Length: 251
Image (cartoon, rainbow, N blue to C red; front, side):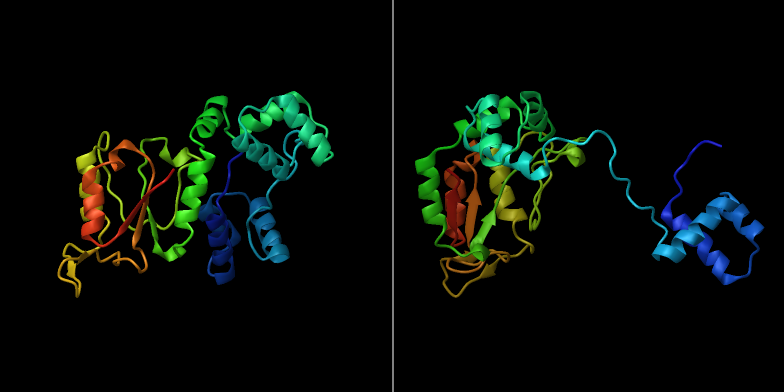
């Protein structure tokens, strides 16, 4: 019989049948379809540990030279300065972390972290220290509950295997076939960011309030977007002004 993985819920079902006492061991094995020795091992593991799940195997493969914290240190250095050579990374590891590492080890660490040269250079090209400092100064005056971050992401069969681009706390979403144009983006802001189809009238007759937002100052009153070209439209600013919101774009 080939090796096969037996699910934990099937083992739990076998133990429940055994505890019930209505079926013999032979009948339980016919129902569950695994061997008598497997049933005995499951019972023994349940008594010793309190559950039927096997312990995770440790030490598979060759031990890595760099720990996870060292790999994160290299990734932070690469994001800070993309023009650093591999021998400079090696010198920094040896000088500040007392850890000798070869160039191939450092290169493999970047590959495992999904950091390619093109990605690092792109992040460095988009980095403007003065603009980032000015943006941090302006955005720091608002509490975190004032901010609503909006972004777009593509979706296909590989979406669930991605490492980057995931976020929690989604309050509005829309699936669009093909590319997202400016008109569709404005419609998304107007329709999908709200949780109810009807608008609420505020005490001020000139301001219409989104049910998921409040006029500034208030919670969820500052829209934060990146510098995509579909965000640089007058309709977005007019929409935010109409709802009494503030509109910020990333540097």
